[in-house]
Image 1: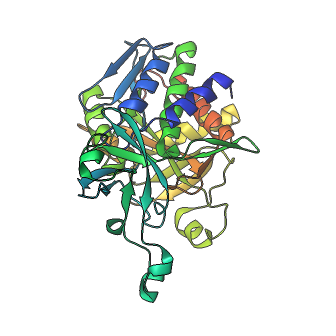
Image 2 (image 1 turned 60 degrees about the vertical axis):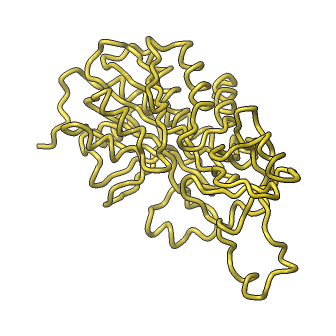
Length: 355
């Protein structure tokens, strides 16, 4: 992968952008797109629509969400401690003892998540996970008056974990769910800007996926695509303790290539088009099945207006919703290449109606 693309990914990963507060990630996404796109639009919710080959046909949507899980301040108590509420789905074991970065009107304020030390806990408390309601954030303030000089109720925060490089082309950090997907759709659009496809391409960074795929609902309705491909991350099952999950979710290997989902809300003709493109381009892919609605942007894309031919392409990820998510640069490159080749091969008037 080009160094410039890796640098773009790292800039986007450093953004503090939990659901509903995505502006930092959106700014990085938009600035990168301005270097090659025909048009860069943004809407009232914070979605960014990057248009390539404007006026082409059919209209194709590529969606990856750039929000992440986090917290927001619900109360500043008299002693200056911050009480918090989760944004998105948290494993309550993860936040304990972590450092946080709080995004405020005056800049980023550091803090730590506190809890009662194990030494003074009762025996029954030691054997259970502390619920999120028993955790607070300490910013070093002496009282509420001092704390309120720096932070305010409603300010968002994320765990303070940057990206680190691991051997074998792997990166670790928070928010690869789903900055990886947002990165992939923009990299695919960059390739398509040179390939000159027949289709009009909309590479969309969506918001609020972690609290219900809200950005995909509004952006898809506005764009009205004929074809939609959501890009998200999925559970790699190649690490310890995943044997039972593998039986439920399917076998997925980090570095094994993009994951193509088959199931109830996946258009079978679009799935076949993706798989045939991967074979023609010699891109390794993995296949999993999901008989339910998926907790991704693919669901609202499929159901928008009178229906959209929809596919879900996923990037293998270890340790989802932790500050140590691990991803493969090779998988990101292969996923972007697959999307670009797939869209480039779509022809005007091509039918996606299963008959």
